[in-house]
Length: 233
Image (cartoon, rainbow, N blue to C red; front, top):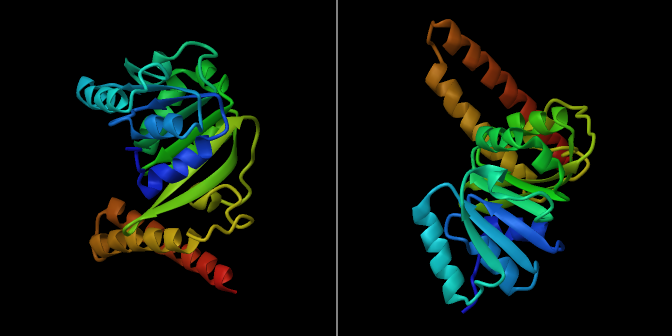
């Protein structure tokens, strides 16, 4: 029985498809590489994780699908598990934006050798985009996936140069105004909701930190609402 992916992983798989080989860093159960190989979207894959327990689960699924010859599992952190030129694409998904940045920064030469980086930060998306811009990567594609009330951002990057011209691009995506994704409105709504929680939690508090947070979140909500109005026109 073939693996069925969640909407988030399905979008990520679509971003990976088309290369010969890939590595899934922080693979967890290994669903993504198994799906890609059994559907012939890639020929070979490496599934890695820092913890032995999820790697054992991945090994079990790989064995059940009889894909041991095409998918190798490795225990280790980030890009350190890879050899130069070993894979064409690297996926880092389901982890924080700060961690993804740190893993790329720890092995910058290895990161730049890849034809494609498929990154799905759970948070701190703006921090990750700022890093990619400064570190010599360019975002060539951005996708969104929705599961329940959450909207996930997927970034596809390669070595190159890009310059953000609108500060909101760090939060909403590179050239979000040019590529009006069908889920962009839902992403904006989600961000407005999260910022509203900060406004509610900091309203009336007298500390300098709380006052700064209230002001920044209030201003950000105004900007997001402005973008949303433009999208509807």
